[in-house]
Image (cartoon, helix red, strand yellow):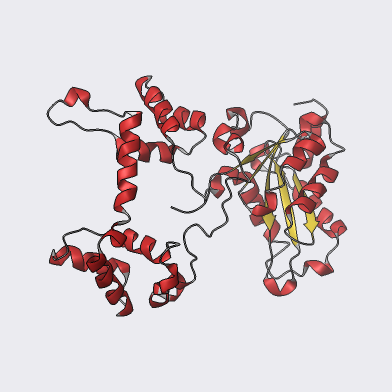
Length: 333
């Protein structure tokens, strides 16, 4: 697995066994464990114990599930345990066969006493122990650029389970409360430098704030958000939802500076902050990817935000985001 993923522990599986017995919904199980619901679905599907002779004993049990998972991980090391199979796989990789072709040929011929999948071969190629063999050089170019497993910088330490979007209160997701924001980073073509723009959208009023940054260093980005929002009352800046980009790793500065809670989307799930993704498309009309931000001041960005905030929106009953935002500030909505 990627270094960014943490396996379920025996404690997690015992809790999950209890939740299954209580017949909780999968979404509720995921929320309590701080995991994505797909992780829970996959765990129950893979590690449920089946007894064909005594069907009444079939079910998900924490200790048995943990043993099944451990056995599955042991099987992934089969290329180290079987030297002949390992040598055959290496020779076919050197002959420019893809892992899919190797696995398919071994399965169709039935020669090898051990079954091996393409995923197992990839793990072998990129494992820490075998990366120095250089077998990645025989793969297509896109695959060659990967790094060995475990060398990728994990992000779970920067974004703890307590701040995952699965832990976020439901009323934020359905936009029933004011003062909850979504944030993202808008980047531009590399020749124009490292400058970027933080886009922030209030979920209920669709009010937009744009902040220019000279780099993607996290703490300066967060400090600018704190300065921009410090003048607002606390109820208007209660939380921010970001993706897992490292530019948001210093999120605790928001808690310390303005008392705002931060939530983080699941990996590869941009729809979980759909308001800011939609706003970014509108912003790109004024700031395409070939924009040179060095020639643009914060005042110009403020003008872009003012144009966006003064456009009527159907979702607001054809009021403008500015009108909706001010009405919420004044307690009229």
